[in-house]
Amino acid sequence: MSSETFNNQTLARIKAEYLARHGMELDDWSALILLDNQAQFRTMGDQLQNVLEENRKLSNKIKESVKTVQFTSILEAFIYGIGQSLPYSVTGLVLGILYYVYMSTYVDYDKIKEIVKRYENVADYEQLIHQGITETDDGIEYLILKPSKDGKYVFGESYEFDQKRKLVKVPLKRKN
Image (cartoon, rainbow, N blue to C red; front, side, top):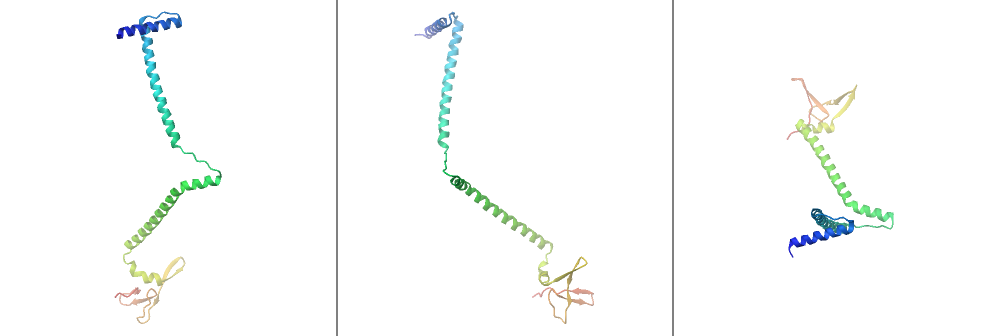
């Protein structure tokens, strides 16, 4: 059977169906347009069926991956919730503590480093800092020192006056 015969037979069938259904006769061009429309609708119907099948498969996958959990009491649900979030909470807490320790140590270290950099001879005044006595009078703070007696120095508490240079000398520590 040739394609021309097939087309003629198909067109004749479409014309006959249209005449039987609507009582009107179609010309060849209208029958061809109806045939083309039927082919397009068949293609769209096949595509729609494929999409619906794919949708059904995805829906089944989603249903399989969702796990429902049911509890018999509020306490059981609470414990489950704690169990689910506890590892994250503990991790966050530990990281927070480590961050705090690091930052506080780092800040303290920077302060000490700055003091040592600014006052390079601060170690020489250690005894004075430990044993020195201060007194506040009229809003002014004074370091209280007593004159030393015959070469007996008390570090951070006594001084010696140098008459020649007109200086007060405060003994801090002995150097070996």
